[in-house]
Length: 253
Image 1 (cartoon, rainbow, N blue to C red):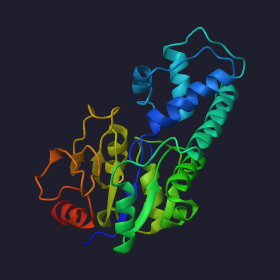
Image 2: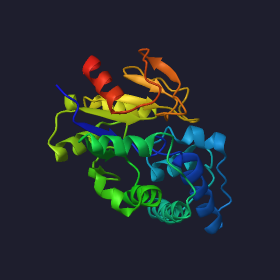
Image 3: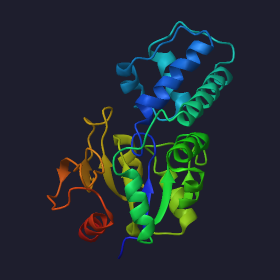
């Protein structure tokens, strides 16, 4: 069965949005709301184990800020997250976060080869639109047949719902796809939906376990900047292109 589609996570996979975008936006939102909360990079490393921004805030309050009380916590947290999203979109418009090595190249090569592209993420649609539009241009949003984002499914990652949703919309079998992820929650989500997965780690996820991954790399690589193979079969390829993905798919799927 041939490879027909590539499905991408966003945060940490396409760009280092967690460190350079979301964390910055959270702290700016806290400051704008006169909250004395400051999330360090080390704390955010732990908070990322919780999927979803609002749930992440609640976890922080339950574990690290137990003295904070509010009469309507759900709506208050939602308002913080809404402001944080607004700030994040502004940061993207300012070019705060570039795509990771090899991402734009692979998108272009995949499109030229006739592969179908999709996105499966639990970040909000506004965040996805901001990243894609401000790194690749607004027209690039049309490159993706389906953009599964936010709360379009009842269960966030590590549940496989978002990947199942995307594949249902595409009317495609998981055996014809590859997923791209960067985290433990991500690979659990993709695997739960029956997908084989390519992992590109970042500073928050380089110690995660990736059992079942086709390959674990530091990034997708470029022709003049090869990837580092962390786990997986040795290859003559030095960067992830369509040929390399077809080789992985043929061998393992």
